[in-house]
Amino acid sequence: MKNKRKRTFLAIYAGLFAILFTVVTATCIFAGSSKVSVLLDVPDKFSSPDTVYLLPAEEDQFLLVGTKGVSSFAMLLSEDGQVLSQVTEPEYATYPLYSNGQLSLIAPYRNENSGEFGIRIIRYTLDRNLLDKKHSDAVMRGVSAEHSNDLTVDSAGRYYVAHSREKNSLLIIDTSNGFDVIKSIPTALGSFAAIAVSPDQVLYTMYPGESKLGILPLPDTITQYTPLSDPPLSVSDMPIPEFRFLSSHLLIDAEGDIYRVLKESNRLVKTVETGGDSSCAALLGSGQVLVKTEDSRAAVFNEEGEVGSCTFHGELIALANHANGTAAVVIGEDGWYFTPVTEDMIEATDHESSGENSKDPGEESSEPNSEAPGSGEGEPGEIQSDVYRIDRNAQKIYVKEKTTYAVLKNHLKVDGAILRAEKPNGVTMASGYVMTGAVLLAESEQGITDSLMIIVPGDLNGTGYVTETSSKILYRVLNGTAELEEAAFAAADLDGDGVLTTVDLLMLKKELMKPS
Image (cartoon, rainbow, N blue to C red; front, top):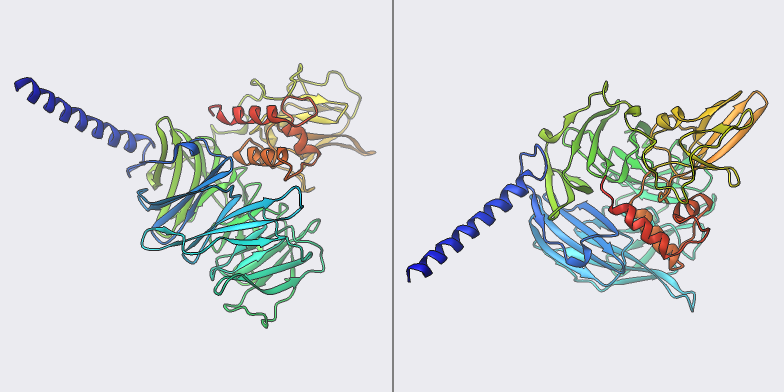
């Protein structure tokens, strides 16, 4: 009896120790955080996801949405990270949308035999802390939505479709009584490259090859009789047709550039280049922007530039904010963690010791078929390097991910010409990470003497570093639902054999698994 009682006490002590250890670990997983971080119970099959999104839901809730292979999951979280509701779907959702108490998972489909294609919209309503599937899935045939700016939703729950069989037209779909196309807005500028609706109900449209942005304030009520026309154009320096709003007055584009929305005209003005991951960015209560710049680090920016940073003990995979605060999701050694991001986690930037040349670009590279770097002795006017591999047959230069333009320039030389660089859209590059598809140019009085296309191995979407988005893109290429242009193809061909196969996908996955 005495031994039995002793074992019981030991079991109780062990249990209490385990609970205490869990609390301490959760509290300390984020250095400097004054709030407790919570270990999330994510389904096993999603432990290493292809994509992850954290969305603000109601004033004190978040939505965590992810995909793995051909499946998706969604979790409704309280403001302190407690799981309120969880669902899984046997569908591959390219991205989620949230508006007016409703979560939409956008799942494209394609029948290779019949050529039929479209999207399935899987809808959940937030009802008393539950993700409630009150509605049947909506199927929209002949609609393409591979990227977050192909289809969007406004605050009233109306969907806006950029790419459909009704070419060169923007469709507005009402869901109050089924799925009805209530308006079709034709454009004289060809197909839409991107669309988005701001929190202030302003429609923004972009067009291929145009350096202008369509801006159209929307009325509260839209019917088939509402007079809406092609949005009036405004000159814009936003080059990439991929962007999202962080608030009604700030947005971030695919290159990590932050723009301010002018109050009266709704025009956009670029304020700062972050070089960070636009899919992992959020506002702080101070109005500053937090952007992921490394696997375990996010930088803090105001309109003057970087003013601080926040370091996480694990891989930072998502950021979001709502009216009551900002939160992060990080994959640590023990699993996924949710934490509120507080001001005491932010460390001020030491500009004197954080120069761009502090990293050694000559570290081991992940370039395909790595040869001895450099191009040897070249002709006058040719770009040369003793650090980066230059393929003269293809006129390409291979650069390690997260290489800034300042660092790159320090390891290039060109005699008798001036070196400059252009982003993939032709805009001059002055700072930030160099990305796949950018071009280095040597220019003399006689004109362009040399040009090299920059390839960042594994960077398929032009961010300058390898992300899960690149893995998702390559997956779609291999299953025949997407194609790559020359630069992205070269970045995806990690084994350097000139053909994209599952070997390249596995190599890309391996790169993503490497510690930062």
